[in-house]
Image (cartoon, rainbow, N blue to C red; front, side):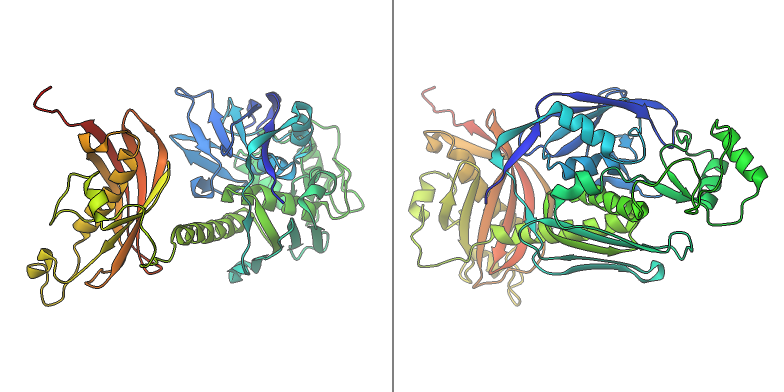
Length: 469
């Protein structure tokens, strides 16, 4: 079943305090266009830099998840992202006037409420899920962390187990069988810490925004009345005691297994940084932010690998080309020996597929490693550029009167040797729309199913001046 992307109907602002900075912060969710994803914008910094919610932008996981890009960073983003995933919102621009999201009550429920207040609107583009294809594992043996993503076609399921060798917490489990259960079962679960961690954070001048109303504090040691009085003074409370459940009596548990549910909430928020909605079952034992991010990077790497492979279509030498060599020469000014493309197999407004047959009778092999002939990498790039040139020239009605000039080549990589007898299939995709005759493209060359070359190209078309002009 095809599902449309969605964003929010109107902007909505949430105000609070950063947990570790203690600074007041205003955070505004704004509607965003299709395929925008989640992005943060630091409106308190000159230039209002944008930070993509991407697992590759994570710079710290010590006490929450921090992302950085364009000279700016945003901390403690996981509870916000969990709310967006839980409500199945695809596209949002989040404005912040500080370096950290507001902690609120330590859960996602206030973000859920605000987003629902804004309302939702369906967009035209379809939501593209990543369906976990097979079991993807991640382990940290020293911390006894185990995580696995398993194939499930119909929904996003999560199961979480925590075990801190604590007689108070014991082993706890939490699970949802559908992401639609997030709001009711998971979103109100608050963050937790152990009393010894709380004291260490206070000693390091952290949790300035903590007021004991936004965290469950597990008492994992004997604590004197003097210590309790000291804590009460720090958090501006008359008194603090240890409740029957072995936690400070600052709050009452919303669920018996609230810590496990919050760990599941964190997982959802951290894995949102993969960048696409998931379909599968995530099972985790003893997860944390660092493990979540490492696991997310592994999933993202698998997605990139599959997307690259999906660009490749087996070359059928018997297929009728869109353009043969003679027709290509009507578009490109190149001639033998510098005409590098033999066929064009596909051409759309955003991509082109061309074919280069590498033969031993080409002049280059008389001088380029004649004893061990290799097709030069620089000529692979030239063949890729000519393929891309067909795409750019297809935007004008008289391509024979235009030249394609390449302005930049970046991130060129040669991944396998090309030898006589090989057939290179080049695919070039636009990275962004062509503007003012300038095109940015990502090119990939395949021999069989193997990628042999890839590069990013920038080209501009210019009109040939006739002598009569």
